[in-house]
Amino acid sequence: MVPKLPIAAALAAPNPVPVSLVPRAQREGGQAIRACAAGPDALLEEPAAAVSVAEPNDEELFKQVRSGDRASLALLVKRYEHGLFALLVRMTGGDTHRADDLFQETFLRAVRAAVTFDASKRFRPWITAIAVNLVRDEARKRRLRGEVALEAEDGAHLHGAAVDPNGTPAEHAERGDEAEQIRAALERLTEKEREVVLLHFYDGMTLAEVAYTLEVPLGTVKSRLHGALTRLKGLLDGVLG
Image (cartoon, rainbow, N blue to C red; front, top):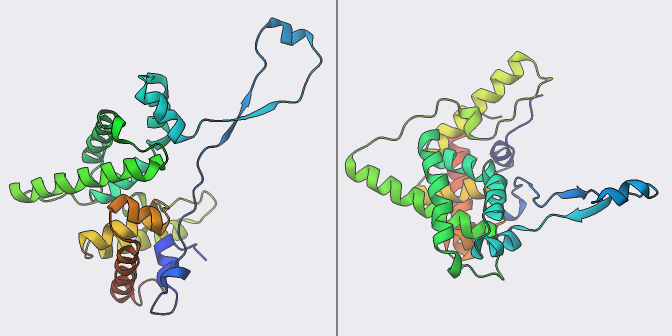
């Protein structure tokens, strides 16, 4: 059986879906790295066990960025070039060119606003909030100009449908169809509902982080998510069984 996408698994639960039981994507950052002994003398010593040294977290890196450390900025960009870019692709309806521009602008804005960052807070929700606001502003300008967002060319890419190398062609096709149906349903949500779903399910944020990112009360996030899931379940009922 083909594994369900995160949102599909949630919608498969009995209606209504309690927010407290909604599964979310799990993604942990800050992978440990191995440090190597430095200097020629180290080669003459007895072999020692490798020392695990934790990478600086995002907040520590951004503190260095505020001091003008370009290497720390490059590392931060690298950490976010997959997850944040993927979120921007989803939020722009699959337009990778717009997403790329927005990704770069997000970090430019972050650097310019570095002095406003509260070092006691997490960096990820803060920079994601910058990205979300950029998407909102850009979408508003496009609507005023009468432009229409480009359609997604690949629904599976938009919504994280990872390809199983061991899956059959039929399973790949089924998963792609599921992702496309979900993408189409998400487009029928309100902008606010869609933001909550994307941040919670596909970006892996907790509800508290979503509330911080969108600058709304936690209760509002729960209400929007519950409403979005109820609407999605109605739109996809019988499709993702």
